[in-house]
Amino acid sequence: MKACSNANTVRVLLALGLGVGASLPARADEPAAPAPAAPAAPTSNAMTSPAMTGPLAANPNPFKFDAGPLGPVYVTGILSGLGMAQSNPTAADKTDRFDISNGQVVLQNTTGLVQFYAQAGAYSIPALGTAYVPASRANNLLYGPLPEGYLKLAPSDSFSIQAGKLPTLIGAEYTFTFENMNIERGLLWNQEPAISDGVQGNYTVGPLAFSVSLNDGYYSGDYNWLTGSVTWTIDGSNTLSVVGGGNFGQTGTSTYATPVAQNNGSILNVIYTYNAAPWTITPYFQYTNVPKDPTLGWTRDAQTYGGAVLASYAFTDTFSLAGRAEVIGSSGSATDGAPNLIYGPGSSAWSLTLTPTYQKSLFFLRGEVSYVGANGTSGNLAFGHSGNATSQGRVLAETGIVF
Image (tube, rainbow, N blue to C red):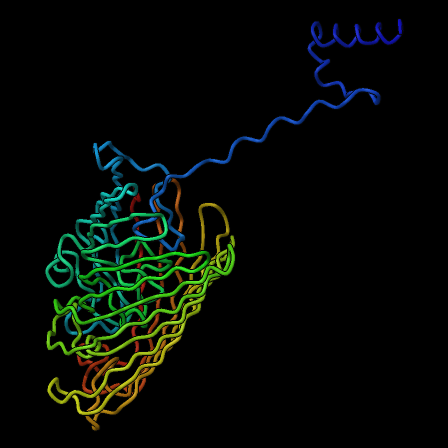
């Protein structure tokens, strides 16, 4: 016992006097010191709306203020600009340009029975194979200075009803540049509604999430569209969605935001998503149908069939690379009375897109190269000033902050 006591005394003196005892290994007959506790994982209060598929990430600590009976109101947003150069611009477009892609602010509360969402500001919505609409004109031609805004009643965590200007249930890509893997929307997105006025109910039970909406389709002002979705969360990495909708009436409205043929048709998507770092992969299938309607200008029905794969790989916490490949075809011909759904009745198209993205805290920078090829075009409805070119390449860069 005496020898053991002397040995312990020497160890204590070395630790206090020489400053090296703390680094001495424990004796074989002494328990090892417990390992220091790992730092707690950082928590995130990032808003889930507007939806963002990545690789861009929302501010994990958004600004908020107390709004009395409404509880905390969160303020988020996006400020970004882009530059673009392209081959074969249409007569309504330019070879190159610089523009604001997003100057939007979002206010929302996310708790309590009565909730709201308001997204306001300037935006542009670049899409493959279509003429670019600058932000200075987009508000008037598209969805106004408040592109999305709605009230929401949430009596429980599993059931809610919302009404106002709603993002569509259709498709695998969202409307604005910052919400998606790629800067531009794709060819399949061009067939889909983006924002609709209407009312929507949502219900979740176990791994299944259901939504149904009565709305005005492609922002037509006529409330004769019914859409719905069912999403199955298979596990933490895999989801499967079936989404569809259609016009149960007739709408003659034709504006830039409301293509008359598509707005009088129906659409179906089957979407699978695998999301497990560093990969996000989303293949999906799309089918559309426009029935014949001589009063609206076509005497034969037409369909489109399309498929796409969207994927993103995160090399580091700050750098990722996304890609998209698509193909879409339509039925009909230039002489059989079918409506034009792509680049003339019976035309088809394919696309490839690559988008590297860098994000550090709130700042981001990303580039993009894309190519669209078209086949079976007619009626001067494709690319170039004459409308007869069958391809278009683009190079883009976008930078800004997500706050």
